[in-house]
Length: 362
Ligand code: GTP
Image (cartoon, rainbow, N blue to C red; front, side, top):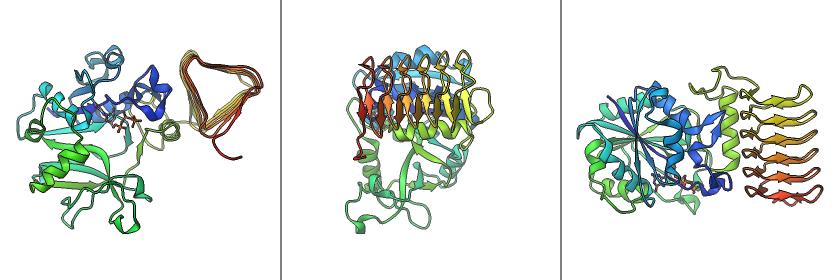
């Protein structure tokens, strides 16, 4: 038996208003909730039992996944009344673990899409007889991340906050949001209070000389926390750049159109776009590199590029979206322009020809 804890309790503020109704890990990415991709990948790596660590809108997860039998794993739930942070959530979830004190337990952030060799991370943990193995990835610009330098043997030497000066950039290795913990170290996290595993647990263990190793994996890695990353992740799964066993239909392609959707033969849907169930794309519309949720309508001649259109939202004819987010149920009239960074709140209504919004100076 290999157990995992999946952290899915965050509020997903960077993806508002989409996360007003739906927790971030349950938003549809390439046709299914992102958590379904993570469960499928964990299962493929040999994980048999997963504790879903929930807080914000916990019921959305259990309504969809139930006991996990339809997904080939045993799923159990631990819900925090108020969010306990990453470390507090891991500690809280420990009540549902069955692993022995010395056994490995995988921990996944619920919003990281990656091609990590999960079984390889567990093997590295075993081989090094580590307390914790951290998955690290290299990024071209590490300034927005906490840095994790390692020595020649792979041992972690420091946990550094986001660097502010060039001399503080001592490595391009960052914490990629997946760990293997020795079970007994999970039990040692203080219970019942907010704990950040990144800012509190890891630095404390390092100061106590615990054996923490970093495993740099060059595979695909993306944090889906922002709208731009969210559409990128979805189109990379649809197009097969990052394979997922949970991709509906199983075969990557130019686009994914879920059953029940209606796409006019005079419309263009491309660039790895995903069109949700019962959505409609009218004639002469273009949907490129975008995610259209269930039941949304893209009007005649509209153009939706690198954007997210929420469930049941309506995009009026000849309206242009580029880098925009439209909340569930919003109705946008004809001939509007919503560019780079524009967000329309769930349920909002915009008339015809009323908006030309861009956060850029163009
Ligand atoms: P933002 O508000 O947009 O930053 O998103 P977030 O709330 O998801 O926070 P962040 O991306 O930093 O969280 C990383 C992962 O940990 C996500 O999968 C969250 O769902 C999860 N997470 C964060 N805080 C908590 C918590 O207090 N409890 C639980 N159970 N999970 C959490």
